[in-house]
Amino acid sequence: MKPKTLEHINEIAVIGVDIGKDTFHLVGFDEAGQRILRKKIKRVALQSTFERLPRCVVGMEACMSAHFVSRMLRALGFEPRIIPAI
Image (cartoon, rainbow, N blue to C red; front, side, top):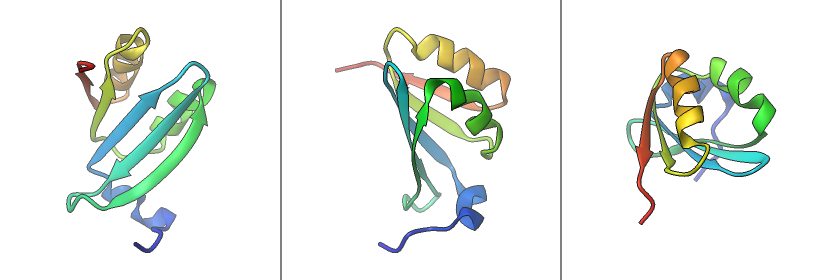
């Protein structure tokens, strides 16, 4: 798999978010299912990071912070999906 450059950021169709205490991990995929984004960010940088990304579906595991993050993403125009932990 060759690494994608920032010019491919506009091709993101789905982003997965792993919510942690202080850091979040983002993984973005295009329509074909190819990974085009992999990024570790601090909690305080979450909103500014998502403001620069194209609007898409964002999936995250249900946890204490998931509803807060979901409301923030919805206000930015994203389509958040909270997935129950199994």
